[in-house]
View: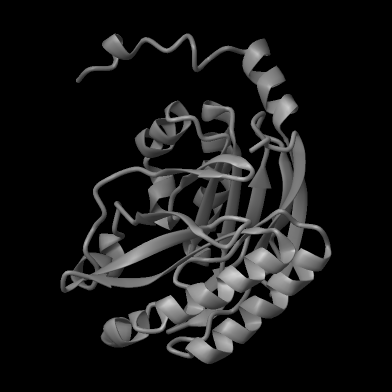
Length: 265
């Protein structure tokens, strides 16, 4: 399979209704159709977009995940679009916050269970943590997977870059009180690893916590290609230019000039 040199990517930012799987699915599909009709080759949805952090009912909501993936698969096939977003998963009696990435042919190209659980919000009380980093082979090349709080851990994003990721997707529910951190870290992870970052953050209010959006697409040099700071439901797009990425890496060969033996603690 030949990876295209340039292609359009987009994020979906919307107000997730807690526990309302059907309503959230309808909203997500509406935006996916819009992006698909606009020729977008990859779309990223927010974290836990089907139900939000409805923690008391996660196991029940996870029962809907296979059906949701089947519907997303049909959308992916119809628009030849890669789709990413995190959903609740139950496996061996444990609940995970799992990022699913569907390829343009509708198959699941990979899954990633959130490694870094945000203890400040009690995520560790409701979810089990993943244990491995994931880069997926897709029609658009290798794509790395992270979720929300993972953005604070540079080791994870670096591992994805070293595994070959040229794009890293980051579904999130990042609140207003720390949104400047999200903005800075999205650019930092892109610059230090010379990759594209596509971050899809939710908007709206849940249990008095405001989510301002700030979904973002950053290029390998740190330039912000798309940003949604207004806190409203919206989509936006940008063009991924893989030759541009390679030129940046050739001009500043930082990844090749790493000295890992000096980083041992």
